[in-house]
Length: 335
Ligand code: HPA
Ligand code: ZN
Image (tube, rainbow, N blue to C red; front, top):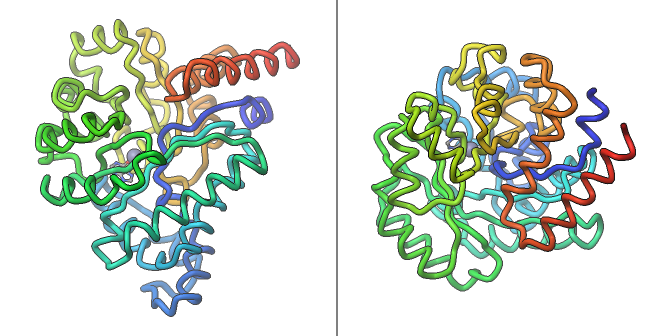
């Protein structure tokens, strides 16, 4: 089963590139850039990754970005993630980045963007991995700051497919960013948003109605509202679910209690993703493995999840179909 999970062609639709910063690279970059870290060793960093909720994670996650300073740093970060994609047969990735966590530290937007984008182009050349960038606004900051960030991104519009919304959910409802998302859609961006991770089902409705999102990131709390579940199923609005994240951040008490299988049974377009793999203990394959063993998912369930990952992607129809064909050839060869 684990080899099947590793090898099945899949897409990743919910990965924060800053959340793929492994402690080893954090230390290497700290040294390269003369940044001092509040940890004596790589082991001490890993030991600090015990979270009570989303905020306790975010505090460490933002602190970790301090080592990222040059274009090459952003390239190296992205390249390390793309090597994991090769190992786990991720054929397409839609990657979040948080420009505000860098511009607030004085790192120019174009430095961040150039490093990420160059790595993505190199991976396409070298391995045929396709990818899109999704610019996320930090919802704990103001709508004004988000609007300024959107404006900053416009010269790079042709290389950024969508905008999203992340960071502290509770107290920062999607409607706070309605004007920013209206402007983003006018400029041609697609939209997604984190909703219903720690926040209520009402935030999922808001993301759909106020922000016009094509997908919901997380969304696991939708089951609190049966009408919403019906709507998500009917419209096939995908959820990008992140099992290890949900356990690490105490959204569910245990993997056995995760509602992913229930969501599939309700007919929702559920996908499996890693969120912040360095912080939550695994990349996409480890997420599939953890949920498979806890909920006794079948090979057919795994196939369904992989299929959903391509269907829910923003690939144009012909590329989507070619990825789905690749998936079906893989299935025909293994059964
Ligand atoms: N939720 C909200 N913000 C985030 C997350 C998350 O899971 N990961 C990185 N930023
Ligand atoms: Zn996330």
